[in-house]
Length: 223
Ligand SMILES: Nc1nc2c(c(=O)[nH]1)N[C@H]1C(S)=C(S)[C@@H](COP(=O)(O)O)O[C@H]1N2
Ligand SMILES: [Mo]
Image (cartoon, rainbow, N blue to C red; front, side, top):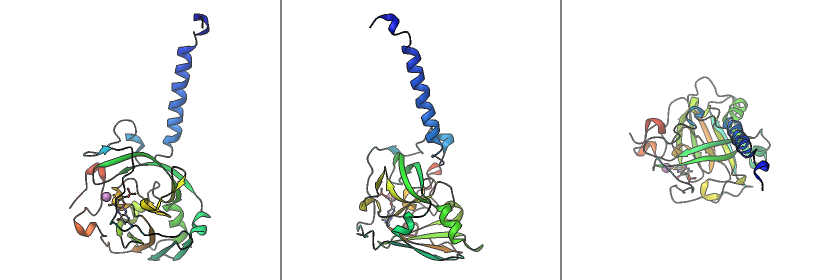
């Protein structure tokens, strides 16, 4: 290749760089967690980035057959309901990229989730004014609690897919919760009931020494 065929090389590289940054900006629309921190520091204090996805749970991974799965919404709501998996898939779907921060000090960036947003759920069930907290109940007996305001964040999803594939059983399939702004113990796997309550009910780990909230940026690990 002669030199006059290359004068555009820098231009091409610049174009590519711009396209990459544009793509990043587009993808950034899906990162509603902390976009402001996206490129500055996405690793909360005391965390290490991992590329794999560790499995953590109480040891028993329930085998919830898709045709048996259901989600019940109970407690202080105008419209209590039960969803089967086909009904859940028929709801408006959303995709998000978000980071996982586990209290055991690993973080995994840019997980691509698909599922139903908490907003869609809240619009349908309509929490009563007294409802201040949500307690997640799972098929393995696990429970965890968040304030209703935390559940209502726009990046909170009930997910059925990760990286375009159904969530594997060990990671909480058919459906798990993802609350990206909190440590991952708040993201219930194998979820089967959301209970809206007036008085906070600390869950499995919250009654065993974990913090009641769990903001990784404040290192709310243990209480
Ligand atoms: N149902 C259920 N959900 C759960 C747990 C559990 O034991 N049971 N463990 C929690 C904890 S402590 C963590 S760190 C994450 C781990 O999710 P992962 O195994 O998909 O990484 O799930 C959370 N959700
Ligand atoms: Mo955890």
